[in-house]
Image 1 (cartoon, rainbow, N blue to C red):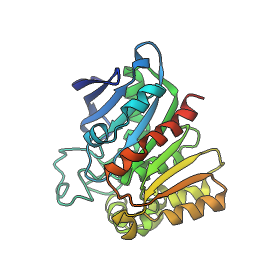
Image 2: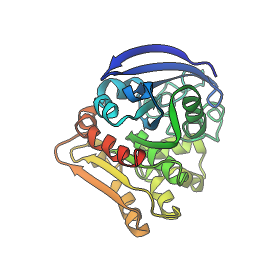
Image 3: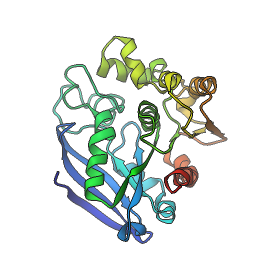
Length: 282
C-alpha cells in the first residue's frame, strides 16, 4: 500500500507528518496524521489512535490539541485519521454536517448508497493499523485508542467490541448512547437502516452490558458547560450506570466551566496521554 507524504513538521524533536493513501476499505483516498516521537528513530513505539468528532479532518487534532510534548516524553506514536470517506460522489453526502462527509460515525454502513464507502469501523479496526504497522516503527502488540465526541463514541465502541485489542481507552465528551440521541438516531438510521436492534452493535452503553471482563480502564472527561451535554446528545450518565452495573472501572470527570471545544481538550490532553502511557509502556 503506497503512502504519499503530504507534510512533515519537526515538533518536540519528533515529526508531525500527514500521509495520503488509497483505502481498500473506503474506496477513496484518505489522509491521516502521524506523530513520530524522537524515540521512534531508535526503537519501536506503542501507538495511540485518536478519533475526531463531527466535521473534523485529520487536521483538527494535530493542530489544536497540543499533545506533542507529552507524546514525545512518553515515546508514543499518535495516529489521527480522517472522520469519513471523502469525495465519493454519493448523492446527499455533503448536505448536512452531522451525516455523510465528516460524519462517518465509525460504523460499517449496511444501507445503500453508503455501504460501499462508509466502512470507518473496519478502516480503523483493521486497515489503518495494518498500514501503520507496515510502514512505521511500531510495536503492533501495544495500541490504545481515544477520541472526542463522535470520535469518543468511536473509541469506546472499538475498545468494547474488541476485548484485549487496545490496552486502554479514553474519551472527551463522547456520544455515549447514540441510540437515544438525535445525532445517533440520524446517523445509525441512515447508515444501518430502521431495524433498531442493529444499532446496538455500535452503542457503547449497550455494548458495555455484554463486555466479557472488567480489564478495561476507561477515562472520560466531560465539560460541564458543554452545550451538547445539556442538549441530550452525549448522555454519559447512561453509560456510567451501565459500567457500574457491569463493575467496569470508569473514571468520569465533570469539568466545571468547560465546553465542547478543543480548548477543553487541550486543557486535559496531558492527563489522557499519561493514562494511556501507563498501560502502553507497562
